[in-house]
Image (cartoon, rainbow, N blue to C red; front, side, top):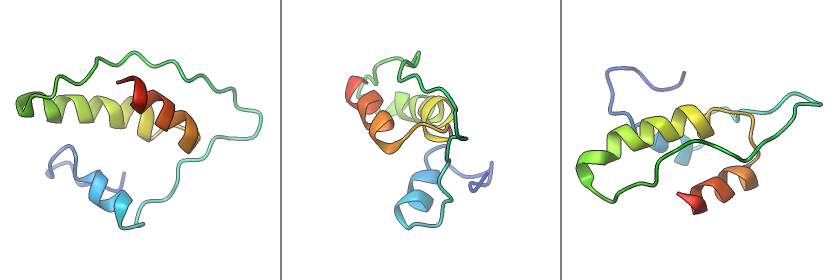
Amino acid sequence: DPVDSTQAPDAWIDVYLTGREKPHVREKGGKSSVTVQLEVYSGRALDWFSWISMWYALVHITGKTASEKLAILKTF
């Protein structure tokens, strides 16, 4: 995991944006499903850390392609 557990739950975004994170690639033959059980982000600052933590676990560190992740993000 590229982010220290003592950092903010969204610290991985900076690691990703600066290109220091290795891509998570699905193994050949791996089946993809764009369906994810994630609540719609409320827009409230107090909800951000719990929402982005769920996004990281359910979407970001999976083997989903960038286009699959974008499709999920547009939904939530």
